[in-house]
Image 1 (cartoon, one colour):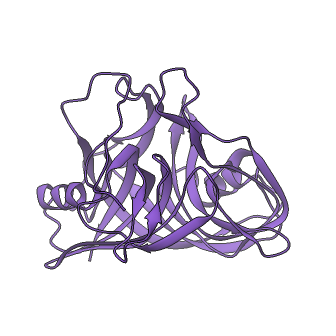
Image 2: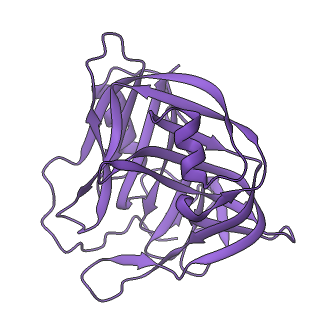
Length: 275
């Protein structure tokens, strides 16, 4: 795989290359209720609070998702594939930021799911039209003091989540953050952690990279890939990230991300929690 690549966005680059809001994260196990769209079930489970959800073993009567796709010619650097809908599917592993868009709840979800035959797919899940097939318990981080809010981004011309402060937190134990295009993902996480006083932290997040390069030399060549961090940490040894990624052609790949070779494509949305 080549060195980290760059792509040209339509708007002027923002001066500030990341946004980070200290907050307090409380880990809980909650129930997602069968028969509801996933978004509604998530909102109900945390009473509308800002949250990060770890979703695994979640059965869906219907599950709809998209993958990244080449630029449509309207100025955006990339876009989304046609919607794929699966019947009787299962979310194997996914991560979700629950925030707000246009003053209403909104969830951004990347992950891996299987169809009825057990075939694996990956991408960006559409929570409004994915309907749960049974009650299921999942782990969440409920956030106090910060939430993701959708805003128009002049640099990319996408509507993107950005963290905003919702209250002053006296003793924060977490950071809600986003990284902008062309930032090396490990390096920007290290910067966020240092600036927020996190010597050791667990890292959770989803976003897009300009291709994906793994430490073993394999990867995905698509210039836009959608990514879920499956494991992440900040420690004295640096930032270590494992991820699953999918590109234009569909098959997912996973592994430990190579250092200094993976740059943000459009955005990367993160939660860092003090260990």
